[in-house]
Structure formats: C-alpha cells, structure tokens
Amino acid sequence: MLDAADNSHHFEFDLDRGIRAQVVEKLERSPRLPLTKGTGPQASGIYALYLKNKLVYIGKASKGTTKSKRTLRSRLSEHVTKIGSRRNISLADMRCRYLIFSSEWWVFAAEFALMVHYQPEWNESGFGSKVPGVGRPGTHRVSRWDALFPKNS
Image 1 (cartoon, rainbow, N blue to C red):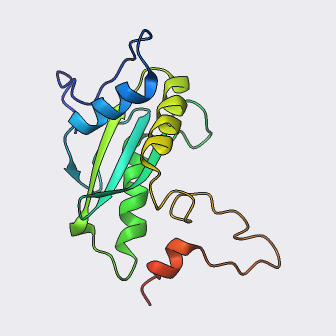
Image 2: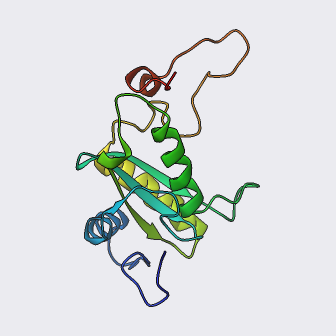
C-alpha cells in the first residue's frame, strides 16, 4: 500500500522538458515490486510489468474515464489473476512498477510515451483487456499471448 508521504510513485511533468524522457526516467527510478494482489494504490496512473527482469507490458489505469473506474490496484490485481491461471509462466517471476498521475490526460500521454520508448512485446499480444476480434461471432482467434501461456486445464 502507498504511504501518504511516499512520493516515489507520484509524478508531475515539467512542461519545459520532453514528456518521454521524464516519464522513462521517473519509471526507471521507481521501485520494482512483486506482482501480487493489493499492489498499488486506488489511483490513476501507468504501470510496467516485468517477466524475469525484462519489461514486457505497459498499461494504464484510469479511474475517472470509465464506468468500471479501474485503479492501479484493480488493474494489477486483474493481471495477477490472469497470470496465475496460466501455464508456462509464474507470478514469482513477475515484478511491476507504477507511477501515479493527478490528471487523466497525463495517464494517456505517459502510457503512449512509454509504449513508443520500450515497445513491450506483450502490448498488442492479447495480454491486456482488449483483443481485436476475440469474442466476435464467427471468430475463433487465439491471441499470441494465449498461445504462449495457455489457460490451466
């Protein structure tokens, strides 16, 4: 849980400097934590997931723009559940980092900047909550992520 005095995760942009450089710098200085249920605050922000020390996914949690009001804690917990139900992967090998933003606009800008910078392999693999084509009538598509890490039987 985030201590109110802990500013290591909170982030505000210096508008005189480039967004990407700032958010990459701040993310890389933030603590790398085990990916477990309850990790992260009930706030909006961005997060990075690591598999065996390799950054594999960048995501966002935006509690003010969706009906589900997803927070960092709820998004990270969703990933814990998903990864925990898969083969060929272990939660013990996963770590995460996150940054908190006071503005929903900055959440979107920071996520985009980090995805452009890192180009994580799980983004657009079917790991996140949106998989193009899956679930549509007549579509039996299996995502790249599902092929690598099939569900436990």
